[in-house]
Amino acid sequence: MNEPAAAIDGRTLIGLAVDLAEEAGALVAKMAATARSSPTTKSSSSDLVTEADQAAEQLIVDGLLAARPNDAIEGEEGASLPGTSPVTWHIDPIDGTTNYVYAIPAFSISIAAEVDGAMRCGVVLNPTTGERYEAVAGGGATCNGEPLRARRSDVLATSLIATGFGYNAERRRRQAEILVELLPTVRDIRRFGSAALDLCAVATGQVDAYYERGLNRWDLAAGALIAAEAGAVVADLRDGPPGPEFLLAAGPELFAELAPLLRRLEADSGP
Ligand code: IPD
Image (tube, rainbow, N blue to C red; front, side):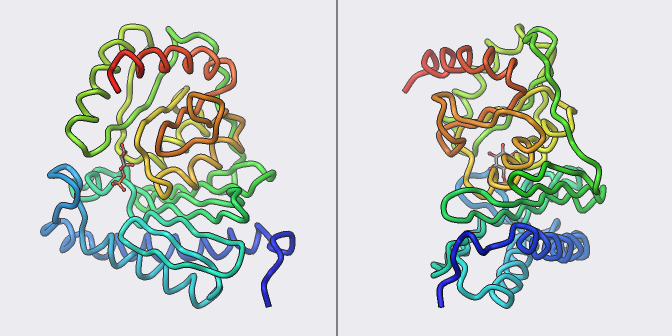
């Protein structure tokens, strides 16, 4: 029998996501030495993948299917399972694979559950530091149990802005052009290399804002909910939901200042 969306408890879903993120985190840590020595590439020479990305995705998919066999699943490394329940899981087994390969401690496991089109819960785990960010829609965001609150900067000139770059060479050129214009107008720029952790950095107040064009659903699903539950506005540049087209996350005042500027810079940088 089909499970009605209203009967699905976000707390149960987040419990499952947290357990699987922890198991996947332990696996990628265990595989680090061998996985790092033989990465391969996907869409371009900067788009890395390792055996650990694939093994961690398989572990998460197996765990989800065992607990909730009727849910749909989408994962970065190819998982694409249709479901019959209202739940779709979005998995990034290692967000920040380049950092993983170079042993930079800024990669994460990101798992989110969408119920009837709305993100219900998400977890982002940094397995190196043990920082585990969680949110359930309407229930706030936490890091290792501590409530999170995004910064309320309202002055662009004194704001620290994180961003990221896609893997397509032409897109990277445009992203760099926009940065040339933005950098002189802000306090500074950060490029950490994991979109999920960038969004958690907005939630903790480690940065004032984060933006990126071209993210995939699995990169942003959990982190966007965590940032929003910490009080940030997370949207595209046209008052729509964040997505592959664009994602900007910032406190409401800074969002209102940054969105028109980014809209103009994006338009100036070409089609
Ligand atoms: C990438 C990271 C990076 C962002 C890229 C993403 P991956 O994810 O999140 O920070 O700038 O757009 O594709 O490939 O490491 O899972």
